[in-house]
Image (tube, rainbow, N blue to C red; front, side):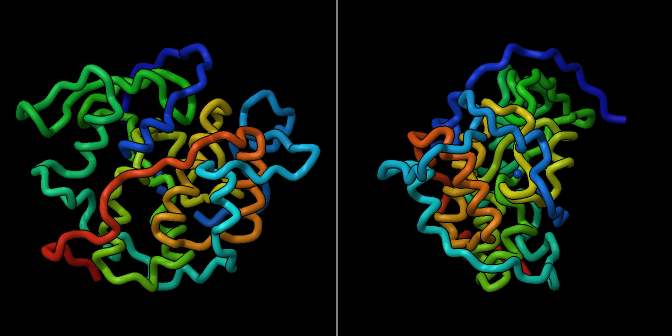
Length: 258
C-alpha cells in the first residue's frame, strides 16, 4: 500500500508559466468536465464565461487556441504504450531517465541514491492539481509524472500517423510532463480539457495553456468540445502566456518504437 503524508496548504496562484518554459497519463470520458469545472463564477480560476468574445493577445495561450485544427477523435485502435517507446527514455542524453529529470525539476529537498540521478526522496511542496503538500519516497510514493496531453489522447488526435521517433520525443518532452499527486492524476485518465480539469482552480489556466502549447508544438488536433473548453478556461485569464521550450520533436536515431 502506498502511503504518503500530506498537509493542506493555503490556496496560492502558482507561478507555473516558468515551470512549463523549462518543461500528464490519461479513459475516454464523455460528458461534463470533472474536477468541479462547471463553476463559471469567475474569480480568476479560469472558468469565467466572458460577456463578450475574448481573443487574447499575441503570444497568449488564448490567442493560440484559435490556430488549433479541429477534427473528430479517431478510434483508439492500435494504441499501446510501447508505440511511444520504452518508458522514460533518456532522450536528452544526460544519462538520467526522463522520470528522474522531472522529479529533480519539480520536487524540493531532493535526495539521490547515486549522488545525481536516481531520486529517492523529496517534497512536492504544492501539488499543482490539488494545492496540497505531497511527500515523495521511492517505492512508497504518491507522486506520478503526468503527461499533460495523454499518450492515448495524442494517439487519437494525430500521433498514430507519426514516425516512431516523434512519438518517443513526445512521451519524454519536459514541456508535456509534470510531477503531480498520483490519485488525482489517475482520476484524469486520458481526459482532455473538455472532460477533466484539476480540482485546484488556481492552476487551471496554467494547465490548459500547457496543453495548448503541447498540441501546437506537435500539431495535434482537438475536438470541437475540447477547443470550446480551452477557450472557456483561458477567457478567464486572457493574458496567460503560451509556455515554450522542451526537447526537440524527434528523438535521437538510437531510439526506436513499434
